[in-house]
Length: 173
Length: 170
Image (cartoon, rainbow over all chains, first blue to last red):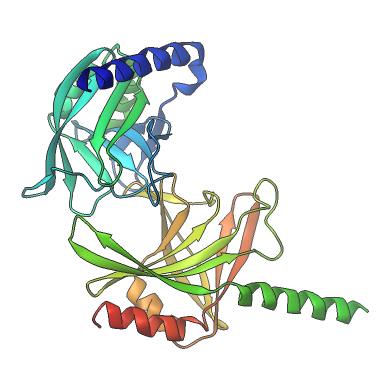
């Protein structure tokens, strides 16, 4: 079963890599600056789960966001609905859990925190993640979403370093 | 004839807004291990319909509660595109005119990225105002549909609201 999952995931990644390489227009970062602050962030285009989700989560979409505030970098996922994650444990700031992520063909475990009642999942050690995402194409995330098994979200991270360059320019002003 | 057409149009609008019924839905919030209750009204057809490509867009309103905490949002069948917003907490934030009956008030609203809902800030205050009127009208500056009224018949909420308050132990 594990092997099957592994195969499916890798197959999906290769297929999506193929698709994304033929469709450059999808790899666009969107930039935001919050009113009256120097909090800036870039997000990917919204994408829905690769595995179908049941109502009320069937239309949930997600964006990967890289944010910068006072020279500190953050990475998080912005969902349109508040995720309910199996195996998350209470910590000081919210629910903490480990899950498997894939960056191109490499898979690794990553720790996330979901602030209480928030639709954001924060990557712990964001600087390390950002370093790993440079010159890669796809980030894939498996989330044990209550009532939906493992929901799988994929983000195209083309042109990551030029995005960082833009963000850095705004962040330092 | 003109007045007849107008009367017919008025009846049609009244009919369409009367058609929309309130319903109560119960869900369980796993994160908080508490029940949540929603009073939902919808869908309502804007009259006149919005301009292309939003001509099929319908709307509704939802009042939600969990353990004495309340929230109110409008929901739409397509993701709303509101003009002249500012960014705040990963949301498009703006203020707009809301008519409670004929009394106009400025209200702060927020729409999170990619969602088809618009939150009404200060929901408890909003519910207080709602209790005194039959209709509320939310004015929205929708892209290529400037200053559109979204009329909501809230007469049915008197009964449904009581039930909601009871279940959320107020």
